[in-house]
Image 1 (tube, rainbow over the protein chains, first blue to last red):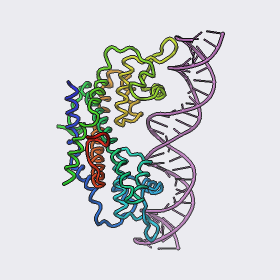
Image 2 (cartoon, chains in turn blue, orange, green, red):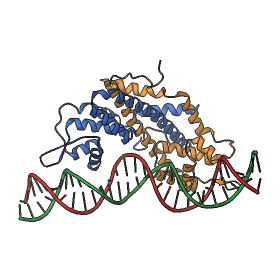
Image 3 (cartoon, rainbow over the protein chains, first blue to last red):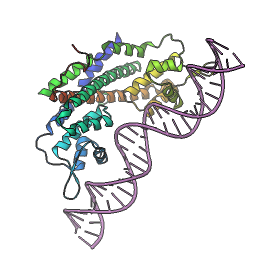
Length: 161
Length: 161
DNA sequence: GCTTGCGTTCGAGTGCGCTCGAACTCCTAG
DNA sequence: CTAGGAGTTCGAGCGCACTCGAACGCAAGC
């Protein structure tokens, strides 16, 4: 009984956490494509909220190829950036580095591997859905516990009327 | 444009992944309480889908106290099991071991620490919500990619009419 | 011309959360 | 009486995904 209530509230809460961000981020994902100038490593790092160290690491293990400028510095073109955006999205949803390496190896092999890549994506989609399920349960459990401790169950723990 | 569509479908998908499971799991969370006999380590391990090794590890680092039977074997009473269920829920939602140790230390100190525990839970709730947000974006991104590869975007990749 | 700062390569180190193996004990069934 | 299986403790090892430090290069500004 009470669990249904908790679940509904849990799901409803999805819309309330920093709203405008989502649109920005998903557009980042699609838009970066067209006509961007090559970026430096720190620019990309800032864009993706990761460290230059990590970007070099990703390159080292073969996830992206990155061109160099005249003085040997990395120069990230639109394609590299797009790939990195995709990589971070996949990482954030828990895809293992090993799987990303596999996927990118396939991507580098050309269109023949599209079916296999599709399989990987479909599998990963299911994984994400399972995670969403688990997380939603955990949210419900957490809110349940909060309720037993007498906490208010508003949209956020901070800055609240 | 298309992103709205993707987002809706992503959210709608939440209800479709192994439906009955959710109820069972959340009831596990609440129900196990009342009148259960003490359990052996393998029984608990099976219940929580983890290894005996891990259960001993959790005890070692102070997350649970577990009684012993006459022959020195662990005997998990209802309280211990309830705590472990909670622990696994929190772990599954990404709470760090360190934070769980902190939380459980507080829990062991008695009711005076309820406010602090409440704070931790509220903070964790926000973390879960952020994760849900990220995951939902990743799901949308994945489905977008699947669509560009010409994949059908049904509820699951397997066994479908 | 020298400092400052951003970049480079390379290999090694870190933190997390388990995971395992060895050596041992205890109980039960045959 | 013995063999098997489930449990115990202890410390060490592992896989993952970074993360860092050292030593160096280049180019601009004072």
